[in-house]
Amino acid sequence: MTRRRTPRLVRAGVTIVVLGFGSLALVASLSAEERPATVTSAAEELGGGTGAAGSPTMIACSVPAEGRQPRGDLEAPLVEIPSAARVDTAGLVALDVSSAEGTTWVVLVEPAAVAAGTGEQPPTAWLGRIDDPDEGLAALVPLVEGCDVGAVVADPTGVWIATCDPAAELGATAGAEILRVDAGAQRVVARYGVPARCLDSIDVSAEGVIAAQSSLDGEAATVWRLDPASGEVAVVERLDEGANLGGIVADDEGVWTGELAEDEEEAVRTDADTGRELTSAPDADGGGIVLGSVGDALWTREVDPPVLVRRELDSGTPLVEVPVPDLQQAAVGGSGVWFLRATQADLTVTVGRLDPSTGAPAGEFTYVGVGPDRTGLPFLADLVADGGGLWLIEQGTLWRYESGG
Image 1: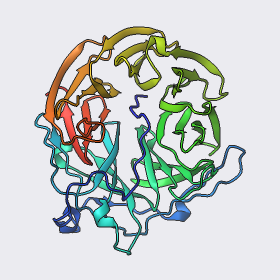
Image 2: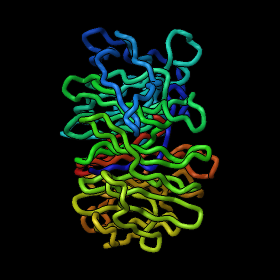
Image 3: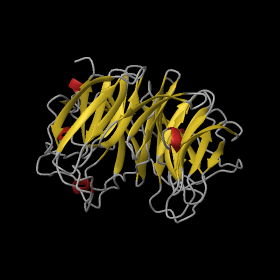
Image 4: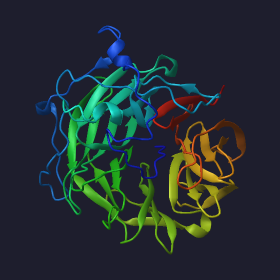
């Protein structure tokens, strides 16, 4: 399974450099027949979860009320990406994207300026279905109210969502959960409590659902495995104190975990069933950020110097190393290894692609971003790659670039 995420957590209803809120929400302007289908999920229909020891864990996120409608009011972006097409998300802020079986799913939240101060209902996170980027949202599924969404991954069995309880105390052993959305029924069909307060990475394979919590306020970064059949949640790996997570990539034989420590960076492959370390790839060979897999190859990233590395999936042995000056972001999918370059010199952003089989350059495009941010760089888009091209989330706006066009 190809997965892009190095940890990032965004709270539903919190500003993500929101660009203005003067217009009426698109969804509010549509008739009932024109609106994307809204599917409600009753709490009694959802399956519960169990903790690592098999005991029930408290589920902190609440189920959106029946008939809940989105409140989107995100205006046109300041950034234009000429080579890509802007996707209409009904005025909602895009957080994360994943594709499977020819369908794309995007996590959306209501802009902060819409959700804050109304006193009517808590912020809600939604899952949008995209069949054709030119057509925008084909459906909307309400996910959770009053908590955060950390990541999404789709596969042929459904769509999996990682959540976080922002009110949970340091060291809490409840609050986070994994949601399963049935892709056909378009509703949440199961919720599994995880004995942690936040999950911000997720992947899925034949071994189960793999989710992780980054190091937060001194808490150890931890990787969990959910067995959907039994509901059992168990620890796959707990990183050493002070180490942070550099992404997770699950395959049918194990889990690659990026481990970022002050004195060492490495990628470690662990047996998801037993937690036994299978192999590791130290930073001398590439780095501790794992990006994703395509076929029998794993791609990792080294920060200094900036290098993208193609490796054997099983052993981690480096096969190809590609230096990428000014590398800021990277993502892996069937269409290629995508990267984003930017400097403090100006606001120009370059997006490039490598052939996933060889590492050879396969094209690039540029656009002018906004900023600078506090580091002096332009504000950077998040990248999510799939078999047909690239998704970019720029300041909460979703864009699509088709690699064949």
